[in-house]
Length: 182
Image (cartoon, rainbow, N blue to C red; front, side):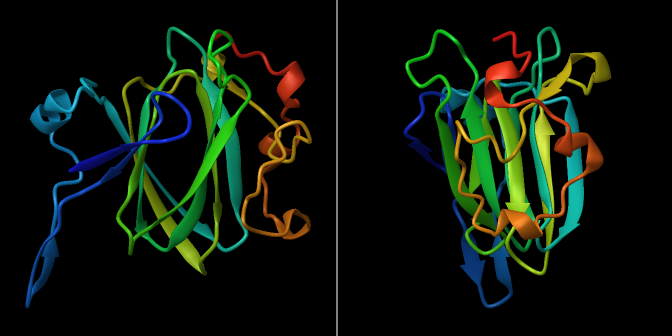
């Protein structure tokens, strides 16, 4: 597993080691002991998976303490623009975001620690996204930021006028008004 620090501290890009032969390939997407050795000692408790069609935009979501979540995000099929926004008020990168294309082809994974809002847009015809969480979902702890917030000015890799967004995500507050407790 190769790790790469992004432009935002604690937000880590991981690329698995592939073992390829005439049959195809094999890789470990997660191995707790290897993550521990890499300095990523996280105990994941829940796996989530979503299927979405082109133009779907999910996010930006987070959960406040005590149910704040670290997520390990990867794409099983298709391609997404994955985005994380730093909500840690004491961070030098507070309010900054990082975006990267994750795909079934590149097999990259993004580790999104607690204290970040997360979302993605679907760039391929369809996409299957899988992510591990270190805390269980808790409705009372959830929060979010509107995907088209002008302060953040996120490039989702698509025309936002054509985005397919849930009613719940359409009414999220802007960045300045979000109830993040990080």
